[in-house]
Length: 216
Image 1: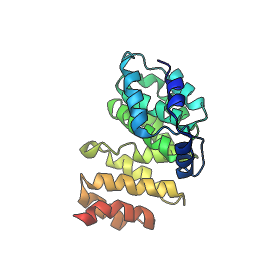
Image 2: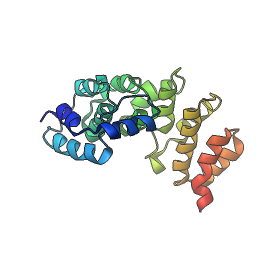
Image 3: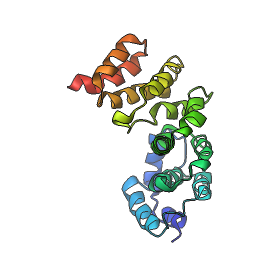
Image 4: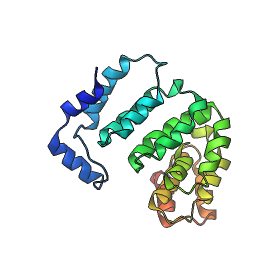
């Protein structure tokens, strides 16, 4: 099964224009929407051995111009996350820095989170450094990689990632801070409420952080 050929065959030029516009024309598109991609991916991934994950496939996908191939790469990482060798973790940094935008970064971050929870030494070797990185997408990943952790959230790490990046003036960082706090508020709303009241977060971060709490 040639998944690259199939993606192109199933593309829709009219949808491609709409999808590119939604992403502010950052990237060209084939016009293959999420439900169609998931169907093709499911058939393709079933043909692969669970131990056949390769970073070459990830970067072959990401080297192609159309954005759907980056989505294929992130779906592939998500599907095989349990078999990714932690010794190859540095490749996540390369992936995060390849054609970076919120859509790819936010799809890669949960896989980063999965491995960091499974192999805590990765936090020291990578996440702690990404907090202070010059690149906003590495910072964003450091902030949001714990989104699914719930009561396993390392609040000291979360606090550090937030407070070290609270004054960047970057929309995607402020949004990430609010998002991370909002998700953790579903586990510990009191902690989040107190954190927001004590820290001088941006208006955007504060509003996003308290959204779920205000619905209670």
